[in-house]
Image (cartoon, rainbow, N blue to C red; front, top):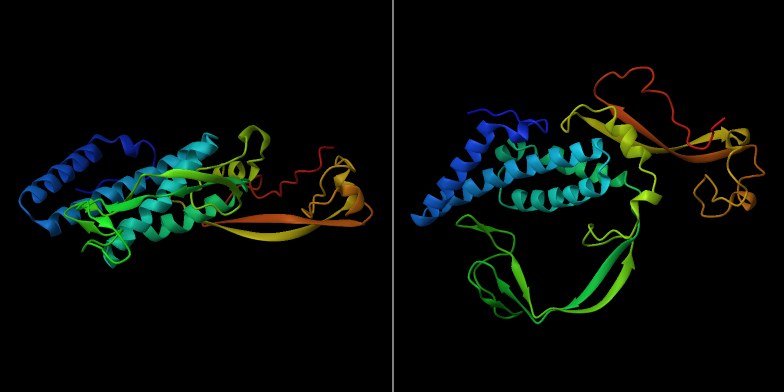
Length: 273
């Protein structure tokens, strides 16, 4: 049975739900019968469907301007994709759109204004294998490998007796969901601009980071005490205010489809006159 899975409406399709229920039942039966290969294959297809659904939801939330929720979902996509790839094969990687999703998740994330994150430091008493419960030690490990699937179950190392030692502020977090920022104070213009030109999560696009120069007169609305538009972190007065031109960061979005002339216009965020 071929199921289209492109839009948010497709994720609620009755036929999709039937397929998921079928795969879950088949996995349960395979586990009961000791058929590890079949159980693992069911896991692979279930996780791949879930990844595609999650990616579509993230895109839909970006379109709805639910940027924080979409950020969480993009991180979940990133994690899930890595586990699927670890347990997949070439044809399935292509069929399940893993390469596309991996590429686009990182590009969507790069457009977010988030730059500061909480990073808690923990002391862990010990880890155990989620498959067999073995207490993991440097010289005492079980036969199960972290990140691999066994009889339809993903092997992870579960932490025990955890103690929080510190909380740091970082720019490159291990856990991207720990965002420090208040979204109401941030500019999500890049996300809004891009999503307005896309109809679904699987349209192809790319992003190119460049710089452009503009006459100083275009920055008449920038206060001399504001941060300089060139992103030097200096104030405008001591940085570029005395120059004839200001070079500012510029983002080009590249699409596989033609756009209207209005959509191709350059958005200049500093001039309101």
